[in-house]
Structures are given as structure tokens and as C-alpha cells.
Amino acid sequence: MKRGLLSGGTVFLGLIVSLAVLGVGYGLWADTLRINGAVATGAVNAGFSVHEVDEGLVRGSAGGPADNDVNEDKEAGGIDTAECYTRIVAPVGDIASDDAVDAVEDVIARPAADFLYVLIKNGYPSFNCYVDFDVHNAGSIPIKVTKPAIGPVPDPRVLTVEFQRCYEDGVQVEPGKEVLCTLHVHVERGAVERTLYRFGATICAYQWNAGNVVRCAIPAQLEPVPADLEPSIEPVRPVTPAPRP
Image 1: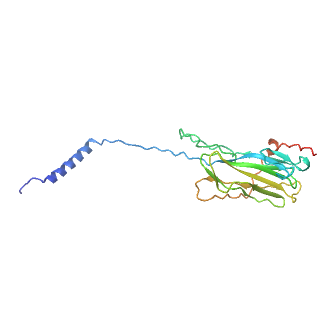
Image 2: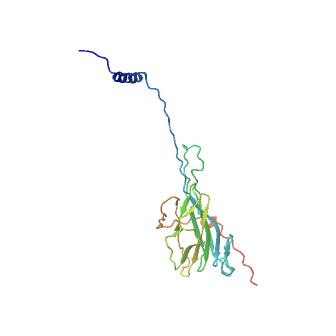
């Protein structure tokens, strides 16, 4: 058989294969690049604050309390008969912190006071209680809040419960900001002596970039009034009526 020279293309291919095998035999030099990441999420955290409590006659009427950032008790005839108490309570316990997250500040917030209790003691027909309160953003991201939804609905023959001068539904609240509202409770003529009447309302706070307005689920039952509400909370100090001319 006649032997001839290999073509140049065949020789070149053989060299590449040989170098590759040689590299595997001596080991592979390499460097590894790594990426580590962490996502610290914000917190939706809303709470209540009470600004003013007025009681007695209709606010703004002759002889009645005024909307002036001062708590006033002005009842018919200047007689201090009923009292309107308020208490704001935070949830039990704190949100647990994450020790594995380093150098991230103000990510996990303490829960805000999100229960507002209102108690009218010794109420009588035509007695009014006005509670000016705010819903504030105590979290780290913007939120939207719904207008108060009353429920369970009280019997209109004994109580009128309404929210006045409230913010718009779905208003956006930046961290550290607030929106205002007034709760007005009026005892009607159908109220019966020595009877406890209950009412409630809910407000939902949710992340600002939600596509639709979130609706609160109205609870079927009301939370019990704290047993120590009356003795531990100072009532609105009565205002001595001015002498009539």
C-alpha cells in the first residue's frame, strides 16, 4: 500500500485534540465568582391616635362643645351626667426580629395601636360623643386605607353611629403621615335604661400599589370591652358652664 503525507488540515486537527487531552491530564485552572443577596421587606403598620373628645350637646350648637382641639364636656343645663371614655390598645406581643439580617435598620416596626375603644357611661337620650381620631402610617412603606365600615350595625332607634369629615376611600398615606376622621355617637330616644348597647367599625390598611381598593370583612362579633377601661382612663374633664347673664 502506498503511503503519502497527511493533508495539512488533518494535521492541524490532530494538534488541537492533543492539546485538549494534555490540559485535562494536568488539571483545570479556574476561578469562581459568587453573588449573595438579601431582601429586607418593609412593613404595613397602621395605628390610631385620638386628638379630641367632646361630649354633651351637639357640637357647634349654642352652649355646646366646639371643634377646637380641646376636650369639652358641655351637657344640657351645665350638669355633668354622662362620660365618654376612649382607649387605644396595641396588639399583644411584638413582631419578632430577625437576627440573621445584618445592618438593616427600621425594617421591622413595632405594631401600632390599632384598637380604639369608645365607652359612654351613664348615657341618656340626646347625649352626644365626638371622637376626633387619625389613622397614621407607622410602617415603612406607603399604605392606602379604607373609610370606616360600621358593623355590626346598631339599632338606629337607640344609637346613631356615624363617621364625619373622613378621608376619601383608598387614600394614600406616606410613612409618618396621617388622615383624620370623626366618630359621632348619639343616644336616641329609644334607648332603654340600664342597658348596654354595642357598636363597631373596621378600617383596612394595605400596600399602596394594590390594583383595587381592598374591602374590609365586617366582623360578626365585637371584641369585649376591657374590664379595666373605666377606672384606668380619665374621663374628659368637665368644663364649668359660664354664668348666665
